[in-house]
View (cartoon, rainbow, N blue to C red):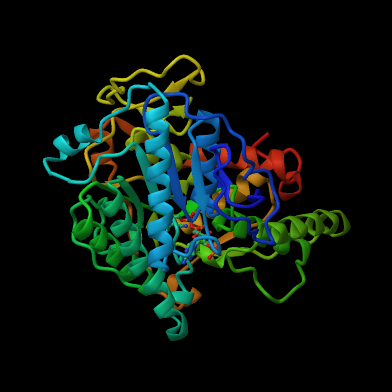
Amino acid sequence: MQALRGSVATGAAGSAAGETDKTDETGEMGETGVSRVSSGTVSHVLITGGRGQLGGELQRLLQRAGVPYEALDLPELDVTDERAVRAAVQRVAERAEKQRAAETAVQVSWRAAERASGRSAGGSGGTALVIHAAAFTAVDRAEDPAQRELATRVNAEGTRNVARACAAAGLPLVYVSTDFVFGGEKRVPYEVDDEPAPLSVYGATKLAGEQAVREIWPQHYIVRTAWVYGVYGRNFPGAILGAAAAAGAAPDDAAVARASAEADDAVAAAGAQAAAKAAKASAQATSRSPQPLRVVDDQVGCPTYAHDLAEAILLLAGVPVVQPEGVQLLPQAAPAAASPRAGAPEGAVVLTPAPFGTYHVTNGGSCSWYEFAREIVGLAGWPVEVEPISSAELNRPARRPAYSVLSPAKLRSVGLQLRPWQEALRAFMAELRADSPDLFLPASRND
Ligand SMILES: NC(=O)c1ccc[n+]([C@@H]2O[C@H](COP(=O)([O-])OP(=O)(O)OC[C@H]3O[C@@H](n4cnc5c(N)ncnc54)[C@H](OP(=O)(O)O)[C@@H]3O)[C@@H](O)[C@H]2O)c1
C-alpha cells in the first residue's frame, strides 16, 4: 500500500511548516508545488493526522483540485499541544486571508451554512477549513491502562484544542468521529441523533471529542464513519491479504491465521506483500490446502473506502472535488453559487456547504467482518477458506458494537450518497493491484 513521503505535505507553494519524516513511510505523495486555488470556494485547508489513511486521500484529492492545503501529523503537529494547534490554525487562517485579498475569486460564504443550521457562529467566517482527522485509533491498545490516558489526551483534549483554535480563528471545522460511539444494541441503522453508548475507551474518547466540538464551536461538521480502509496505511483488507497469503504459504503450520476485526490490528502493507510473495512460491511447491482464515461474524457494520469518505467530506464542506467517483450527487445536491473560475480543473464539482451539524458517512450497505473478508479474498484470488468465528473466540481487549451500521439519511438529505461497499472495495483492490500486484494471485476476479 502507498504511503506518504516527505516533510509536511502542502499544496500551497512555500507553505511547508516543518521538515520531519516518518521514517518507515515511502511513497508518492507529500510533494510541494501544487498550483494555487483555482476555484472560488474554500481557499485553504488544514488537515490534522495528514499522514493517516484519510489524510492521505484528502491530500490526493486536494492536489487534484488545486486547492492549497497543509497536512500536518506527528511529530510536526501534536494535537495535544494547545499552543502549537492554535498557531497552525492561525497560520492557515492568515494564509487564506492573504490569498483572499490577493485574488478576486468569489468566495462561498460560510454564513449560508450558518443560516441553514439556524445558529449564529460568531467569528470572522473565513474561507479556510480545518479537517481534524488525527486520532489515537488503536482500539485495543486504548484499553491498556498505560495507554488510556494518551488516548484521552489525543482524542478528547486534542479535539478540544482544535475546536478552540478554530473558534478563535473563525474557521469551520470537520471532526471525524466513529460508529464506535454507539453501543450496538439496535438492528436498524443508527441515525445521527441516536443516543451514543460507547463500549470501549476509544469510543468514549471519540465521543468526548464530539462533545467538546459541540460545546465550543457551532461551525462544525461531525462526520461519523466506520471500518475505514485505503491505500495509505494499515487496515483490515491489508490484514486479510497478509493472513491469506500466510495461510497459503504455510499450510502445515499449526497456527491458524486469525484476522482481527480492526484496522489497528492490521498487518503492515509491506509484511502483507512479502507474505504474498512467499505464498505464491509455496503454492507452486505444495498441493496441500491452506488453513482457513477465521474472521469475526457477529459484528455488523459498513466498510468505508477512505477515498470515498474524503470525497464526501470535501463536498459536504464546499471544497471542490474533481470528478467524484465514490460519491453520487442526488437531485437535492446544491451546486455552489460561485462557479469555478477559468483555470479550474475540468470536472471540478463544488457544492454549497451543507448545514453544520452531525453526519454519518459510510459506503452503502452493510456486512460482517467475515463477509467483508470473503469478498477481499475472492477479489484477490487466494484459494483460502474463510471461517466465521464469534467475537468471544477472538477475545480482543476492547468490546465492539455488534451492530453499528450508520444511516445515510442525513447525508442524502444534502444530496450526497456513497457507492455500495462492494463497489468501493473493487475500486480499492484495482488500485492496490496496480501498485502491489504480488498481493494478488494471477487471474483473480478483479481482472
Ligand atoms: N480507521 C477506522 O476504521 C476508523 C473508523 C471510524 C472513524 N475513524 C476516525 O477517522 C479518522 C481518520 O482515521 P484514519 O483511519 O485515517 O486513522 P489513522 O490512519 O490512524 O490516522 C490518524 C493519524 O493521526 C496521527 N496522530 C496520532 N496521534 C496524534 C497526535 N497526538 N497529534 C497529531 N496526530 C496524531 C497518527 O499518527 P501515528 O500513526 O504516528 O499514531 C495518524 O497518522 C480518525 O479520527 C478516526 O478516529 C477511523
